[in-house]
Length: 354
Image 1: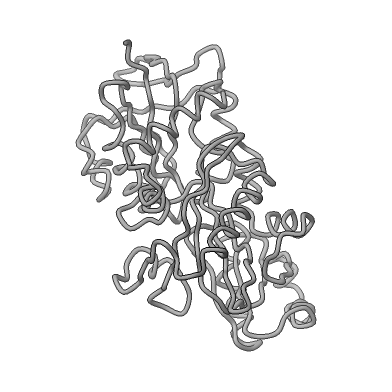
Image 2: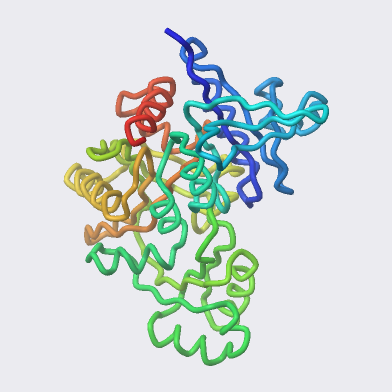
């Protein structure tokens, strides 16, 4: 059987650049070398694209950028090319691509931006399309969609950062009319809990908006929900499969960036420590939310489960982490799909969707 050409893209101009590198190493190490010729494209934090052909381990620590054999490269938006343009010694070479596996988290990676390029190129790619990626990445838009569909979630409101800057007192009064303290303040677009703060009073609320404004132009305010943080991995296109449910016991007050990736005291429980009927309800609601925004390929759907047994949607991550501590691959493995099978299935789903 003739091998297919597969490009893995990682990095990017995102606050989750470093996590993307670790996830990419996981994915690359689990792609079948018998089925695919693997081409690795790294994007620096400055937005420079390179074809990297060195050791996968160098991707994790970022030293891949210093490889002397790196060549400038990019995906052509011209659908007649259907490939990657590589530039070296003043010459251009086109390498045809059969499929693209983006392993990019956050802005420019899972917000529909790069998916738009893939659509223009005509090359099949792993994961959600433009609209689903954009909707799920934007917490304000996602909350409005879920609210319109009657999906249970935290009470929320939002404002533009520019309006807050012009009239902070007025904006804070509007927020306080809707929500009681403590209030979670989030940038509409950011991943891995970057820019999120918990405000216990007006002084902290104003500071939290300042933090969130560094990440995005729209600010989301949500009520504090007391309950277990649980996650469900969803895999598939038209008929998705929902994994068992995992539970997060964060090392800090909430599951922020440090608690996710740096603090060894954060604990994961698979399956979650909730009743079987609630696990099934989470799985059912995960698929419902997945369908509601048109997800494809994969997503991790996050919920709160309260003491009075409410299952409340938190958010959908369309390109979840693939690190050694990431919930998505762990949940799939617990459901009987190991890392190698998972990566192969994701590639198959990309072809199926195309």
